[in-house]
Amino acid sequence: MHKDTTKHPCFNKEKAGSCGRVHLPVAPKCNIQCNYCNRKYDCVNESRPGVTSGVLKPYQAAEYMDKVLEKEPRITVAGIAGPGDPFANPAETIETMRLLNQKHPQLLFCLSSNGMGILPYLDDIAELGVSHVTITISAVDPAIGAKIYSWVKDGNVVYRGEQGAKILLDRQLAAIKGLKERGVVVKVNSIVIPGINDEHIVEVAKVAAELGADIQNMIPLKPTQDTPFSGITEPGRETVVPLRKEAGEYIEQMTHCKRCRADAVGLLNEDKSMALCGTLQACSK
Ligand code: SF4
Ligand code: SF4
Image (cartoon, rainbow, N blue to C red):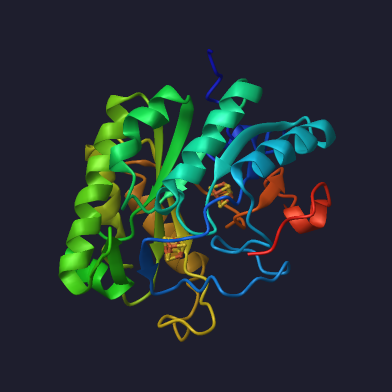
């Protein structure tokens, strides 16, 4: 089915006031540990990726989608953004996309991943009509990546330090290339972490652009309790705006990201979650 890929409010700012998105929280596990992430807090007042009020099974996500579309017909995008990583939970992710593709083929499908486990699923992504994928890449140098990731897990093996960061980076770069070969629109999210990667993040933009990524979204670190980066101050506009300007020489920049929860629903400027919208009682984690 032909899909109008311009109707994604994150990839196209002009549509942010008229097109909405749903994040379906079907992916609880993660296969890496970022030093800014703590998924144990589950608070509806908290608005950031990695946070959700519940986890759905694929069939529940499909039923939830039916109800959401009845209430909010402006939804054009169904995405999976966690609360862990879609490809640390590949069976749930693929099954959810398969059900949505059967029931709501007119929607745009979107996945947001750290890239660690995505490579075996590139053909499934294309075949299931996933039009938009985000890969979060905050460093293209393993020495810097080693400061950002505490560990990465490949099957049952855990890698740390530069070795882990290099494995992750190689997969992230291969993911961009493979997705572009399959005609998928690719966004690169990069977390701006003062003192860690702020002087390196334009390099991420250059590498992403060379591989054909379409847009970069620099997200200021939101320091989270009980994480190694909890003491770092959130970077302000004076840090992020010049970085976006410099990186914009290489790749288009997203400037309207709302740092949504893993179960966000509605227009980007309406910060609802599954618990708040009340269309479905989510099962607990
Ligand atoms: Fe948390 Fe996402 Fe990093 Fe996994 S990839 S540790 S869910 S921020
Ligand atoms: Fe869009 Fe940013 Fe929200 Fe993701 S976190 S759905 S990119 S606004």
